[in-house]
Image (cartoon, rainbow, N blue to C red; front, side, top):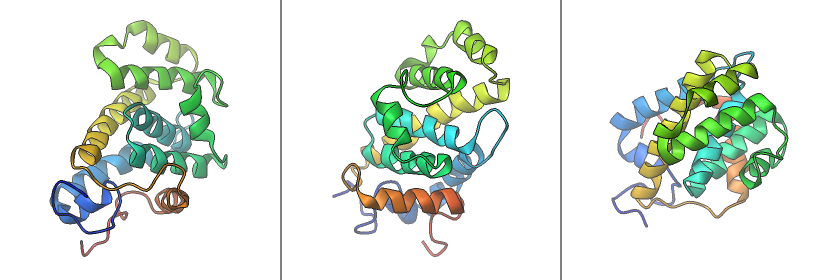
Amino acid sequence: MAHIPVPANIPGIVGPMMAYPETAKPMNALAEVLLCKESPTFSKADRELVASYVSFLNQCIFCSESHGAVADHHAKKPNWARQVWDNPEKAGVSERTRALLAIAAKVQKDARTVTAEDMNKARSLGATDHDLHDTVLIAAAFCMFNRYVDGLGTMAPPRQSPAYLEMGAMLAERGYIRAIPENA
């Protein structure tokens, strides 16, 4: 049971967003900007993978599972995100994505540990400055989102619940601005 009144049986971040639409709007706009754009060097799937990985490192079940499902949906690779959670060094991702995930992990733990060498390694593998910016901001934003979800004690379906596949497909197809009902 959530620590504050939110709509019953609404999982994760969705309940507080429905209860507090004034904060939901800018949070969803940020998620939309960071996760729903595509570039030649940083795909939607990779962006969602960063969000999911940071959420996994933060032990946020709802966010890691739901964004993992979005990443899997975009990549058309079932359990792709889970492979990254298990071992990013051996998961089926490019060296560039692996370097971005390493930066995201540092941001999650202690952003002050990100070095120029980390950034230069990612650049040498094809990451642009825009990709580096977005990686750091996705990681930082998801630390906030994860703490919002878990700090309010929201309900989350158990890991690997089929509900996450449905959420992942919906978010991948609709994005984040339209994720919360208008009448909430």
